[in-house]
Length: 147
Image (cartoon, rainbow, N blue to C red):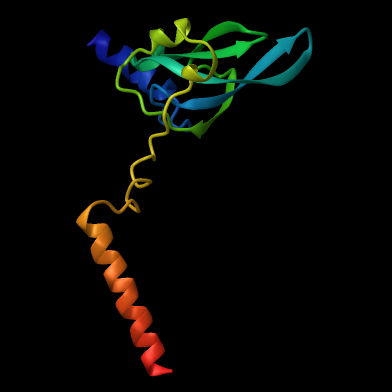
């Protein structure tokens, strides 16, 4: 019985206004920083390399490169200090943890975009190429004949 009360309290504190993040996404995390009596929002831009779903204790690890040094930061998703999370790019990750990005430098650090599927659709190969050329020639001939 006491467990259900704790679960009810946790469910009431879980945030629902944040987007669903996936590993490999490039995100902007808007984080509130309080210095003395001043409050400001700092944006942390990076790639999500790890995601832990633990209900109220869910968090993501975001990695970015600053002055050729890797910086990783762990953000608790249900924290009131996170004001907003923007997804800039959806990366195509085939693993649940992207720790291999720690060893990469330069352009090899980038992940492919998840929306890459249709760029090869316009490539015409083999006999299809000959059939398309014949169809274009036939259409050109029909256009000349009608003039």
